[in-house]
Image 1 (spheres, rainbow, N blue to C red):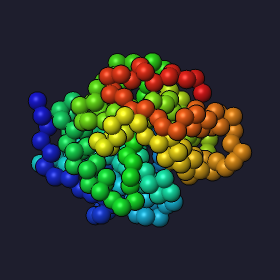
Image 2: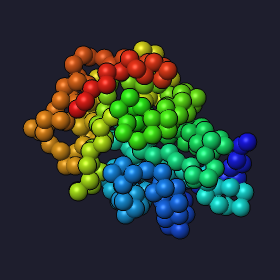
Image 3: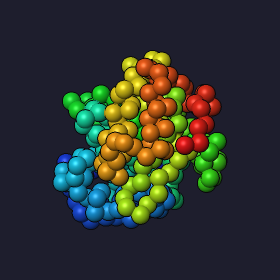
Length: 239
């Protein structure tokens, strides 16, 4: 069964606060743990271009304008990197094609921006995730179906606001079809530094965990890129 998407609304182009709040409350907050989710005010500021990191957001609407799901991207300009920060579908209609429609609608358009040369996403590593292993594996299978691949480095998500915790046990995915086998480590490290600087205010000298993560990323000039089915080739490092 496929859920019919009636329209897409680009909130960063045509902002509607009611739609934004409902998407955040009904979809994002229902899909992500508190440590993984920005608060709504920061989300809104990013979409309106009032935050350090510009936010892109596309919402899928049903035929009766009900909110089905949405996708959120963040532009880390100094690294020319797009982070697919969130993609989520309303819990009662998951696995009905909405997520795939959102990826195919948003990612190619976002990749055409002049300030984006790399597009990445963070996803739980099923080998390390403390939640549902089946859910983490299914999420990887979803990204495999939409053409993503996995970078050969483990990842730790920064604390998204004061009082929150970092979340370890992540993988980084890439959406770039022109990356056959590897991506420059320096490009990924620039993204990680800016991501942590924006989220946590992190500056050199970095704390031991972040320093170890960056050293792992930069240990070789290139980071291999694998099919998602081969994600077990990525070292399961316990940062």
